[in-house]
Length: 181
Image (cartoon, rainbow, N blue to C red; front, side, top):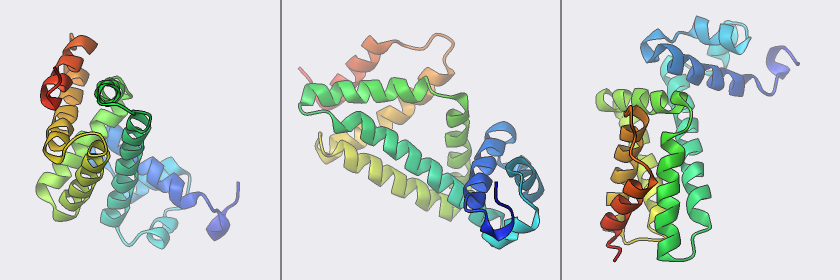
């Protein structure tokens, strides 16, 4: 592995380490020192790559939002009919809710920051617009907005429920929102 400023992957390692630490300790437990140690980089490289912790966190969460949008894209891309699009949304909800606990924690940490701080609120707004735009390739705008909220809520409820609802209930909810049948 390269060292110093010639390490082409250092910035990416720092961002990944930040997300890992956020998932483990929450945003409040994250520091430059802890991130540098986790990423295996000198502490001084933190200020070389980022002006401060806020820039680092915002970039890390932006990358995470991009990841979730890519999951939306993968699920919705193959749908050619309204029925396939509804099934893709059902699959998306189950994929997100059954995914790593880390992802659930990261989303909640981001939402907490967004509730308090404008740059994170703007990031969430961009993320929601991107998600809705993908949904709008299959559904009218108002339906896409409702589905986006359903996806968020159902994902959270399924992930935190001791006895999460199964695919039939998810499919029924998606059908109701989309006016199926």
